[in-house]
Image (tube, rainbow, N blue to C red; front, top):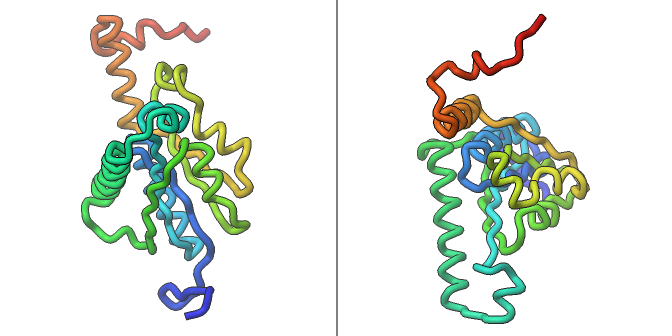
Length: 185
C-alpha cells in the first residue's frame, strides 16, 4: 500500500490528534475528535503524555529504570481505560492509533501535531484550583501549535459537578446559586 492509505473507499485526510487524560473534558474532546476524523476521513490519534515522577530533571538526578517502566505501563493502562470509558468497547467509527508519549503534555502534543493536515483537539482541563498549580495545556498548544487547535468545552455533567462542589464547599443548600446571583435590572 502506498503512503496514502485507503479508508472505506476514500483517501485518508490527515490526523486528528486528541489529548487524553481520562478526565471528562478529555473524553468530550475524544468524541469531538472522532466526529472531526469522520468528516475529514482522517485517523484519530488519542495521545496520553506522561512524565517520570519528579519530572525529567528529577529522573536524570536519580534514574530508576524499573520505576520508569512501571509509570509507562500505568500510562498505557490509563489510555486504554479512557478509550473504554469513551466508547464502552464499541467501534468508534474512525481508524484509531493510540499513542503514549513521554513528555510534558503541551510540548508533546505540539511535537506530534506537526503536519499541515493535522488537527489538534483538546478538552477543558481541570478546575480553577488545578489550573492555578499547572500551566494550561490548551493555552500552550493554541500559542505554539503549527496546526489548527480545537478547544472543546467541558460537558454539562462536568459543569453540574463543579456547581455541586461549590455548593458543598460553601455549605449552601441546593439552588442557592440563584440566591447569590446578581440581580439583573
